[in-house]
Image (tube, rainbow, N blue to C red; front, side, top):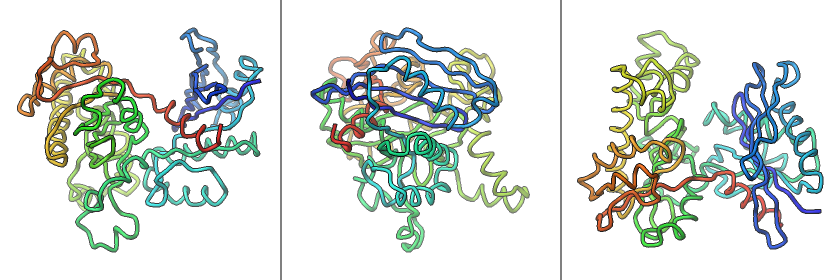
Length: 394
């Protein structure tokens, strides 16, 4: 009987999961991936095996699957029937915010959960659901080891000056600082680059994690030295429904002159802005690229503008640039967005190879380009599984 690890990534209305077999040498092999989506509205369990073949596609009633605990039970039933010979050794979770206290994966304890609860205001869109999944496992399998892997941890290598805001220093000491996010994705890219692009892996690299949530990270020798996101996951690039960089005076204006409540502003910033707000059509880049709407064109133009502006700033942080890496949903799949970004970065030394870009890389710049450009698929789930295996000593 072999050991297996379950990786969970909980959202507000979904519970994504991956299952990994832990071989005798500690090697990890993906066995299944899927999600329960539509929690509380139209629940649906979908999953595929390692070969990509669908192993489950089931719809449920709202009353049967209304929360993460019931979603986890659906997943457990599926895995019990498909992988009866596997013994579940632990569960790894993506937890968005580790605050100033946690800079490495953490074995979950009651004391740790109390601390993680205090970080909910820092990531209100994610943290409550991440912790709900942990509690769901505790309820169903109270003795099963669980590991929290933080999206902020990778950025804790940044110098203090890179984490500061221009506020009285006492606020920094109280935890108001630039944390950065998508760290599990960046950590995976840093671990993978030596195999894909060894000539730049230890150099000055900017990674663009472009998806519904989007950010950029400046890495030197595989370590984070700067990032576009800050105290929360609202900062930096414009995203699917989040505005990115915003003058804080706008928030004061909305509160004082528009009469909005704090809850109204939170809803505006997390759910009604970004590509959705600018385009008036939606937050899916694929839909916007196919649209002839002037506002869809404007939303795309601003998305690329913010990437270009951030790229220049992060290159300055690095003191130069050796490579740019595109990853995540848009970064991996949109040759159009990659082309626009690279064309605006010609001044940095990127010479795009159009044919390679259309193929999806991995290298999409011409040989001889002073700054090379790459497409590297990310795998946050595998990164979580690696951390969980190591922490549990498997």
